[in-house]
Length: 254
Image (cartoon, rainbow, N blue to C red; front, side, top):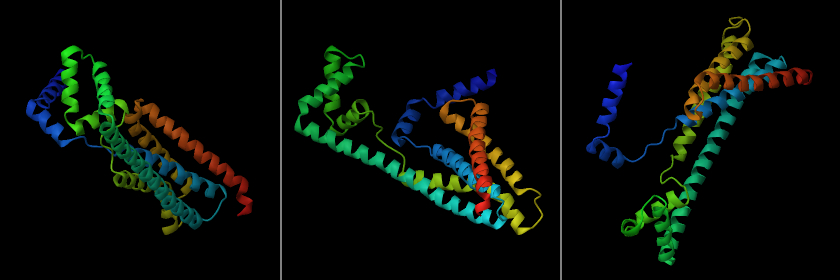
């Protein structure tokens, strides 16, 4: 344990040398798309298993399960990816609009905007000549001035994720994990009687996927991996049960 802590401290020290810090800051922030992967995976598993459960509950043929499951997988996956793309792009458009607005306000009423900077800097503990010097430095560069207004006044980040990458990661995760509930039915269709109870295997495999994705999700919501996995398993299972019951009740219409 002490050796691990020593190695961690050495790595921490190495990453905080002047050269390392300068290199890291010059590279800029890098966005992780793991969040899109996790939530795309959860939605893919839940929605596809819900469709499979409903069709299985209606006791329809294996081919029907595959067709409806694949249709749902592609359509819902694209829908979720498109929504993520549009939402992420809207955030970027909001950021650009705010940047233009701040630039216009600085151009139109510089003294008022300078006073905003003064009060922002003052709230951080600056006062007297140090306060005025800080205000002078910040407002001497138009770009730096605008960026400080964006982050401190409006609470916006300066750089956001790529809408296209966010959408692509969402769709890939949705399709890959959402395909799991269909695997036993596809195997049963290709090699008849090879799977004794395809719906049972579908539920078991998807349950494992629910738990695994939920455990990974714990990194983002600050839950224990065990509770996060169980929570996702319960929510996904509830969706499957509801769809199965509805399929059973309406099975006579098929």
